[in-house]
Each structure stands twice: as structure tokens, then as C-alpha cells.
Length: 257
Image (cartoon, one colour):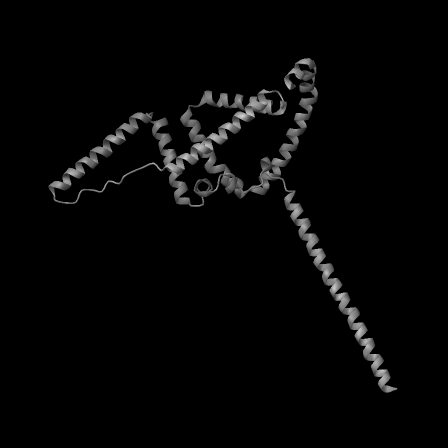
């Protein structure tokens, strides 16, 4: 009897252990499911974060990546400072001192050629080796890549202008007209060299500041885009719809055909 009782107790203990083990495994699976659900929810939340202009890539990739993006984002402060300093010195030289580009290139070539010519002849008199003047060649591949990239961007811009001129998108038409009007005002106030320098200053400041305060700028941009959409809806309802309603439908049908 005692042995039967012990046998029954051992069976009961095994059953209880199995039940607890199943409960632990189920709790572990539940915790894993909870972790997966939280991770999926967090990833979905990250994917729903608003980015300025619908950007999906980091700022470094938007700028094209590589060394140009490193320069604009000040990855190497010495190189970026040197490039920015050279551009600033050129602007001061040509704009503030009113030194013309053609005259500068000619004077620089005269000075360089004269210095090398005198140095080479002086080396023959003092019996020293003549200076080694390196051969400079423009590589073909980077030039072809640059021209190809410019061709793609120009064709893309021409396609956008063609779609706008066809009268299919009123919103883009208004934005382009407003942008060209603002550029015409800015162009009438500054010359091309000053505009180029302003664009360079913006490239060296805005991307790095945006990368530093990305979340704050995106949150403000989201609010601004909502407000712009509201104002555009009001403009569309009060002005654009009335203007389009006055256009004969036959003309629109001819355009679509």
C-alpha cells in the first residue's frame, strides 16, 4: 500500500511539473509575442514619422553621398573649412574688390609660368636638377559621370515643365510660377556670383543644421505643411474652382484629346 501511495504521488508530481512547464513555455511564448508586437508597433511608428519633403533617406544620401556630402556636412572640418574659405575668398576678390575673373586667370597664369621658367633656367646655372613639373590631365570617367548626371536632371526638369505646361496640375503650376517670380526678384537684386556664393553658404549651413535638429525641424515642417494644405484648399475653393468653371469644357476636352 505504501508503495502504491508513493507511486501515485510521483505520478501527480510529474503531472504538476508538466502543467507548470507548459505554463512557463506559454508565458515565454506570450512574452515573445509581446516583444514582437512591441517591436512591430515601434517599427510602424518609426515608419509613420513625418520627414520633410517626404524624405526616406538620410541627409548624407540625399546630398549624393561620398566626398561632396562629407564636405557639406562638415565630416572633415579642415577640408570643409578650406573649401568654404576658398569660395569666400573668391567672392571677396571678385565681388568686393571688383577683380574680373578673366584678368585673374591671366595674371595667375603669367605669374606661374614666369616663376617656373625662371626656376628651370636658374637650376641650369647652379647645376641642380630642374624642377619636376607634373603632367596634368582631366580624367575622362568623372567628366562623363558629371555630364550624364546633368543630362538626367535636365531631362527630368524638362519633363516636369512639360507636364505643368499641359495644364494637368494646377497646384504645381502655381508653385512653379511663384518660385520663378521669387527667383526673378532675387536675381534683380544680386548678380550671378553673389547668388552662387549665397547658394554655397546655404549648402554649407542648412544641411548640417538640419541633420543636427532633424526631429524638431520635421515636426515644425509637418505643422507648416498642414497649414499650407488648409490655405490651398481655401484658395482652391474660392478662386481656382471658379476660374476653371469659367473655362469652356470643349477647350478642356481638346486638351485631353
